[in-house]
Image (cartoon, rainbow, N blue to C red):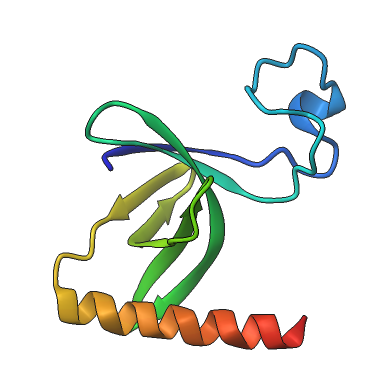
Length: 114
């Protein structure tokens, strides 16, 4: 995944609440509460992902993303500088497992609170 863009329709809906012909590509028959990031795969296809959360581990921020129509989350290193967002792959398998365990622990805590 090399490219991404973010879209959050917010409480007022896409394009300031005007849902007719706004061009955002969303089906306006559903709720737009989720933050979405769009990744571009190595094959050049765009993949919409819900942002499950951003969290810290060992002085680094990470982001968990859930691609549409899947149940498997992706976790990347995350850096935000103003409007620019940089996602980095976690190359080391042991480190990825540690980060994944932290995310799952946080996710379980959040689910218990609901």
